[in-house]
Length: 268
Image (cartoon, rainbow, N blue to C red):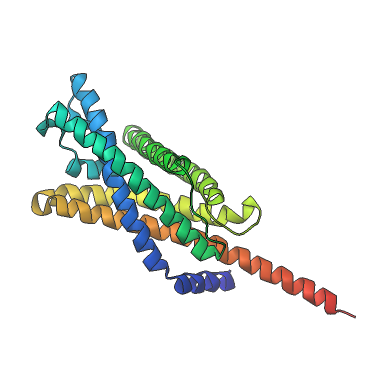
């Protein structure tokens, strides 16, 4: 385990893990802004049509709800203005989803040292947007469970986040560039993502959300943007660490197997 830990740290230093995480964080932020605007403007419009308060839509939605409070101002716009802005945000969402997907591909083939490949067509972009929608819906369900069921709900919420984060990132890691190998070689990175998702959820629920609520009057949208940037950087660091962990352990396993095969051939 100690040897594997040093190999992971060495690989991260060689590929510039912090820089790659910053690049992912920047593209994640650019993706989140139009995504949040489109989703919460549509949901806010539906809520207003049903006679509900649009401001309540962004409550209990994790980091996207925090960002929505800064970028979505549905009560201050006419219907035509909202439609025009939503249409522009949809186009921007497809552009930024493509840039984020390309960044994920680049990070993985740099870490895994495989041939350069890039996503083709709109299917990866739609999958990424769908992934974000599922994550937002999961955040709503988990926060409702946490607030309604007390300690038992909090424990169950952690278990749900762990299981779904593990499954989704395991599947995503299989679709992203990696060295030829079995799916089980991607389990360590999926486990790291599951733990990281729990940490991010707890940070958002018990620290970032409360911090932004207290500092909004002082720092305004700048404070919200900084909080979201911190959040996406942590997420980017987890993604890079996940890929690095899988790659380091896989190549370590391959090297040990090759050394074993060489030793057997050299035996008299």
